[in-house]
Image 1 (cartoon, rainbow, N blue to C red):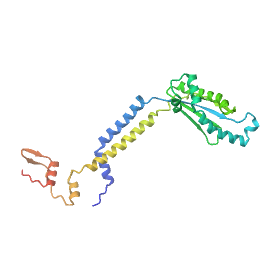
Image 2 (image 1 turned 90 degrees about the vertical axis):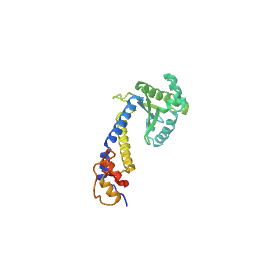
Image 3 (image 1 turned 180 degrees about the vertical axis):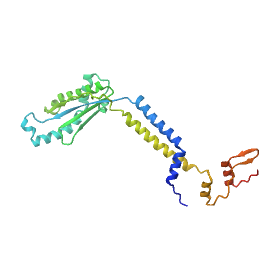
Length: 247
């Protein structure tokens, strides 16, 4: 016999396990909020923009070949700016207690397609420190490029500034709490259906009728057995096992 689950049975399962679902969901949300506010260190970011311009001659700025060359150089410069040579000097100037690899992990370089401008973004637990590091990286990079590439074609388009709202970029409390709520809800609902699937006990006359495919002719509500009252549920289970009781 094929078993089908109706919408009514789904709602009945959720209703029966509603307490467990609420408890797990609330706990998951609370844990997510607790970890977000007490265990994750807030990080702030600051970004600066750097322009790659092949020539100081105004007429050549609009030359197609010159523009294409600058666009191709952006990819090269994006690698150079994250090199140990640049980052080590930044660390020395700011007396940072970190290695070039540590600083590199907090550094992101992005550029738009076919653009001569690329953005340098630095994350740090201190908003003022992230601003200083971003500006120092751009300054050191601009000073070192003539020595590395033998051409002076870099200019700082905009210096790094603190965000006006002053909020950290990581973590996002609302997002983390929302994820915790959704994960907790999904786990609790899945667990409710799993427990319902594993529960093979017969709880009422309707379930017995569906299981045996036979009509229920009568129900014993309460019986005496060895000086002890037997509940309806116990009597029903005993009937399924074929036991016989005497009042």
